[in-house]
Amino acid sequence: MTTTMMDKDVLLEVTDLKKYFPVETGFLKKTTGYIKAVDGVDFYIKNGETLGLVGESGCGKTTLGRCVLRGIEPTSGKIMFRANGDEPVDINTLKSKPLRGIRRHAQMIFQDPYSSLDPRMTVLDIVGEPLKANKIAKGKEYEDRVKHLMEVVGLEVKHLKRYPHAFSGGQRQRIGIARALATNPKLIVADESVSALDVSIQAQVLNLLKDLQEEFKLTYLFISHDLSVIQHISDRVGVMYVGKMVELAETDELFLKPKHPYTEALLSSIPKTDPSVKMDRIVLSGDVANPADPPSGCYFHPRCRYAKEICRTKAPEWKEVEPEHFSACHFSGELELKGVGDAI
Image (cartoon, rainbow, N blue to C red):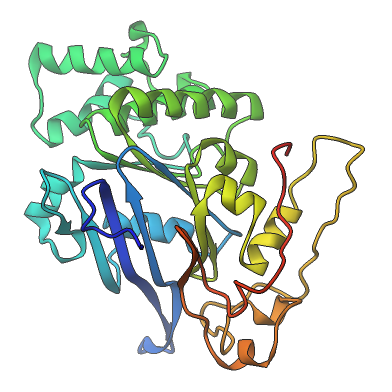
């Protein structure tokens, strides 16, 4: 049975979410088309779990994450969020004042630890700004809360008066994490939060995020293009291609038994840690489809080695092919696709 917002353990449910950016041409800026950055996406996230979102650059991952928090206004769709108590609310229908109240329960960790911090503000001001904006704490309580957050993310309290330029990339990202935790949120959207860091620092930040999730009962929407990072941190994984979700399943299930050809191709590109294992990489032909002018039928069919006539003419349905395993492929139940083992 499909999990929905009716289940009390579901924190966020997104239904048919779309974000179309208008293409304007000429002196009068006439709209001549639309870039379908997010094109009818469905998914849910349960309390306390991490949903990883993966796909090629430009597939709509970041746009989706920002639409969920209304950082970008969605074109249409439902974003049901259980912020207070048991009654979910549709974030997409809220006006500015109630939306402001919801945002303290849903925060974001940005990709670039350098540009996401104001260079004119001290760490105390950066981490404490959400506390002031949401009128959560002031005075001694405010400073004590910021100090506690610094300790929680592994930074020294004596550096509170420093400015961002005095910190390394990994330290800056920890400051960003502390800022996201300031309002004690339920949901955190982490947008490529370790991609700008060295590999050794990536591991430290990922382990910190997992520890914080357990300590603060956090729920993550974790966006990344790195499959090994996604496998390490995620409970379930969603795969996006040209604005659409093409597969969604538990992490082990998706990595071992993919149901969509695009997922199979992504998994084949993961470097193997064992040099004796022969790599059987699937090289996709052609280019990624243009979201302003996508192909008919299945968007992936021009690059798919399993494509048949129905793929060129009819868009596949988003369906549950196995319990809690969703896919958008006409032949999800028929194809024998190759996954990867644990050693990646």
